[in-house]
Image (cartoon, rainbow, N blue to C red; front, top):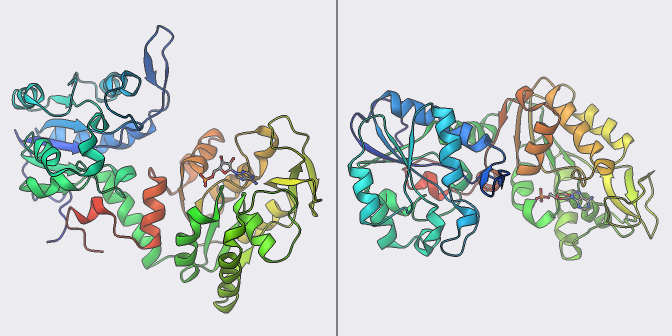
Length: 399
Ligand code: AMP
């Protein structure tokens, strides 16, 4: 079975109850009057093309998502604030159901008219969601005539709403966001325009080692920054002082370095640093090319920024995931900003994934200059590692 996408005309959505698994796992903040509001609506906006297409085709929409990691019902992680946000974007009323399964919700779903939108309460109020419980998946499926998955950010999870329920609904399809993410990211692995440059950063080698190993066989250059760079420098015998390193990853870091050399992949590591003697926002930053025993590297230094920018010049394809330093703190955020700028202006096909890199792009107003900003950090990494994402597998995607 090949995957059906919602825009390939194979399914008639008119008057159908269409269950759309969206990724509305958005940050919430105080609304100033004791309630909550959506702090960043990027994920809601990312779902709009699919929702508008389905509404235009006369569907009855039933939307479902998780938000946070509640253990049972928890008013602080309700999707109610998302209903208000969505209503403003869709320009139509959004009916809110105070649960996602049960007789009351079933009646609300059955009473829907074409063009109406019902948003269900947080799927993770029920433990059956993450357990991919059969009974829970059947209850969700009973609400719908058609199942659509557009939650790329959750596609690496085999949960009831992202995978299990697909088996219990006759008609199923992938949404426009899922399609764009899958086609773009698999496209990177299949036919990248060269030179292909990958930039990896962030906290841990262990989180990125899968993708790093896979990319070694695909890219021309790998630039490594962030805390993970210090494990690589330590593996090369470079003094890293008190920088964050993973001692149990030294061997694998060494073998990545050797394997890059054997494949003629240029692997670039920081040559200077913005260092501090304590891990604190107010710590005094010092620029250095040699870390002393009391120092820790918290950002890439100016020479490294120039080196990385030079390596990005003329790139055909760029993939960037993970910050170059502790970008949350201004004094250690310049390296990440410099990489964001170099990626945005390199002229190649650019893909950025991972919450921190994406928020650095947003902060610097550069997101619109990136070819594809992925909405799923974990999902994009697992896809690029070559894993078959359960959300795509359940729809019959041919990998
Ligand atoms: P990740 O979620 O793996 O992409 O890691 C992101 C986190 O890594 C951010 O919170 C950064 O503050 C942190 N980080 C990046 N560079 C460093 C560094 N040199 N030392 C400590 N933490 C870092």
